[in-house]
Image (cartoon, rainbow, N blue to C red; front, side, top):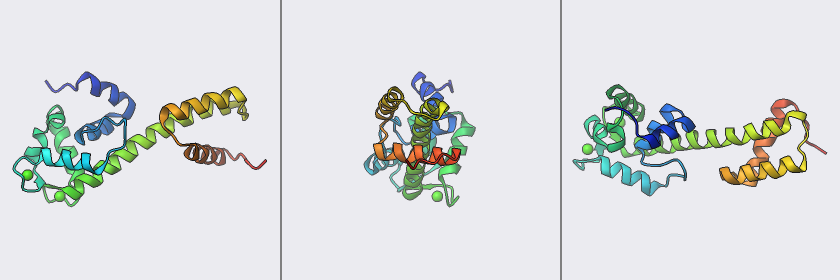
Length: 165
Ligand SMILES: [Ca+2]
Ligand SMILES: [Ca+2]
């Protein structure tokens, strides 16, 4: 009865339990950035009595939330209710959606790229083939060239590698 759907199970593996719970609450698959309109729509559909705040009952009745165990529902609710007044204001909802999205998405995507980069960098040399593989990886993950450069630089400086040629 309280089992997550199969799709959520897959995402949970990718994002971790709390990540996917939050992501599904905000009505996003995590495959594309959330925009403000989607956040507003998710909020509006949850606010059943249209008083511009979401009560715990309204929150629990939301389709994605109702799949969760009751204790998880109230944990999530408390997490979103930043000023702890017992209802979720739109600002709180939007902030949490954006924070969650950026944390969950960027952490996982960037970690996935860095995993590939670490493998390629095991011998501290990126061969042409490895560079090709990394470029494909970045493309699949939707990372910009600029971000890839930054990530590699951060990683290298953590390893104490001087990149200057
Ligand atoms: Ca309401
Ligand atoms: Ca609140």
